[in-house]
Picture (tube, rainbow, N blue to C red):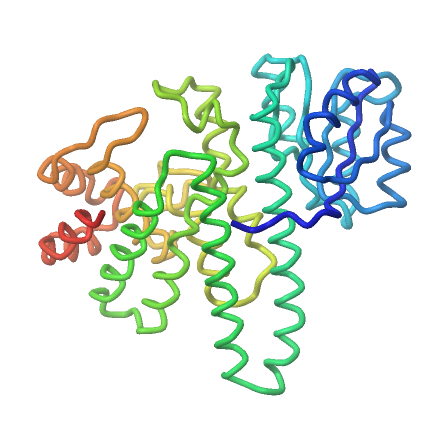
Amino acid sequence: MLKISPDAKILIIDDVSDNIQVVMNILREENYQFSFATDGLEALELIANESFDLILLDIMMPKLDGFEVCRRIKSKQKNENIPVIFLTAKADVDSIEKGFEVGAVDYLVKPIHSSELLARVRTHVELYRSRLTLEENNLQIGRKAERQGKRLIAELEENQREMIYVLMEMMECTSDETGQHIRRVAETSRLLAHYTDFLTEEDEMVIFNAAPMHDIGKVAIPTEILNKPGRLTEEEFSIMKTHTEKGKEFLRFSHRRIMKGASIIASQHHEKWNGTGYPNGLKGEEIHIYGRIVAIADVFDALTHKRQYKSAWTVDDAVKYIIEHEGSQFDPMLVKIFIEHLPEFIEISQLK
């Protein structure tokens, strides 16, 4: 797990000083540095002159409410990636949706639970630091790669693979998706790519390393929705669906093939062959082949293994589902490959 450096700096914005003190007392055990503001205008002035790794923001404040403060923060290019978490007493679905619409990465309802606040803050600070590191590494290594060629490009891809597994660890901490699920999806995706005639060995390598990032956007989904044992409400599912776009946003800065592949997969693995998927309703070959491959790999593994909200299906029932949804949910060509080499895919599904 990535360690948070002791200089990680957090800005707390709340018009009630006692609330600020409570949050600082909870987070002090992680050795963060703190700044605070008691209204939105004061906060925006601080943000204009200082750098922060995370912002904790109340909604109901004088002068500017938290939604407007968040909008103004995100309107500045230098601030657009700073994670903002709302800490508020407003628990209605409309406020939660609006919080994510204006750019927040998380939403916590008061009264605050210490362990939850610590975990959410740690996850988002780690993710933000990882993204900064990745951007800096890409800039530095990219310049060297122009001079030194394939050797340094290979080093970059190794760094990307390491970063993928750092981010995967954080994803495992926020959901019931295990490392074995991620491994099986990667192996299944690689095998589908291997048997797809028009894909190359390079495509196999990219999809194998990028597929583990298919659900990275879920780190931005509230845990009460992500780990809900029952069926999601319509409003909750709308929030859950945003993980595809969140994943694309997290990965959009890199121009290297693994991260570009991961961005495509994160965005498109819930698109459907008939155009009824999300987030963009892409249809048929409008969906990138990487997204079509991971769609089958992810669904097959999810069906054949237990989740908080469902029991494991039998392999026969899962295969039947894939076949029945050929041409509607899944690419017919890939379903044919899947069935032709079914024993190999079943073997992967049994990895523990």
